Amino acid sequence: MTVGEMLKMMRDPLGAPFFPPALQVLLVVTWVLHIFFVTTALGSSALSIFAFTFRRTSESWLQLGRIAARLSPNSVGLGIVTGIAPLLFVQTIYDPLWYAANTLSGFWSAMFIFIMMGGYSLAYVFYLKGSKDGRLVFTAALSFVLLFFAGWVMHVLHSVSIRPDQWLRWYMPDGVIDTRGVTFHAYNIPRLVFLLPLQAALSLSAVVMFAAWYMRKRSDDHAFLEWTAGLGRKLGLVVSPIYGVAGLAWALTEGPEFGVTALIAVPVLGLSAALTGYFLALKRPIDKAPLSLAVWLAALLGVAVIREAIRVASMARFGYSVADYPYRMDWGSILVFGGTTIVGVMVVLYLVLVLYQANASKEGTISPRVERLGKIATGMLGAWFGFFFLVGIYTVLFLR
Image (cartoon, rainbow, N blue to C red; front, side):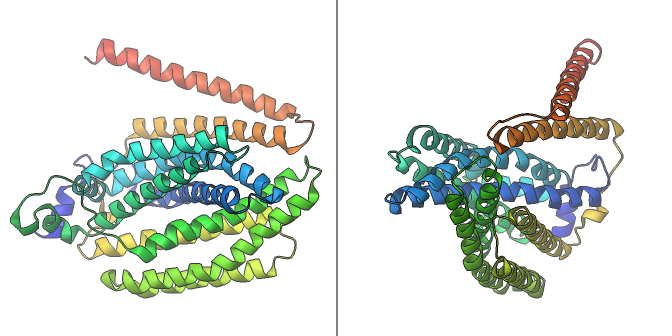
């Protein structure tokens, strides 16, 4: 049996519930938000640690460190929530890859949730108990280590998943079955550096500038906000060229294995040059903060496309293509998924608008339109709960 035949046999026999290439596009788009919040969490955690460890004599740094300490657990939570969508699409159209990787690294797959729980909890401990004076900075440091290690686990799982020709050797090294799942079978350090620490610095750069712009309407300390935005610009200007170097190292190490060296190097170097030029030309970072955030999200979309292109190239070696994945339109699942998405977006949009308006001014007033949106979103959420409750009753009574 060839590797390609094995992959096709491992697919869900029922097929995908929707047109697979459409799910592939959704996978790429939703990953952008997920990686943005993940890297923001790492960047803000690192900033708070740096401020309370090396800049304790500077009130500006301490104030920024407190903001970062508050941002860190919020970003972790958003990273977890936004990670559900790309994981769903991976499990749907790349199920042979995902489940095989989780089996080969089963111990770390199971430990991942506990690692995240520890990092999340410690980030909250520091924010609630230590960010005022920095007494518990070690909890922030431990949180950063755990969150970064969680990123390492996901990096390994992805690296394992795109190397199906190695699965049997990893499962039976020297002809002996290994079911422990404790070995980190595949990884690429330049890729890890590119996707986690460097993107964390660039996400932090965009968020810091956006925070200064956002707080400008309700803060009288304009000097601090200008300093904060300037710091974000400097960070982006310094990291952007390094970002390109790490991307080139990724292309030269992992690229030849899948025949995608140019596919990685050219767009990554282009992104690095574009970001460097943007930060170099940015004269008033506090005024252009929303644009800076949009530019960085666009760059992340480019990275998401490159990442998916590498996976496609890897699977093409074995004749596996998402376009060939069998599917049947499951309208029940599609309608439930679509309805849940609409309700979720409405509720999240209402919460975001309330938080934005409540903190955008000293008065903290909420507009009548947002209040009306809240009533609609609440009603939709109630109807959603009611629908699933009725489905449960119907299932118990009539589908036993």
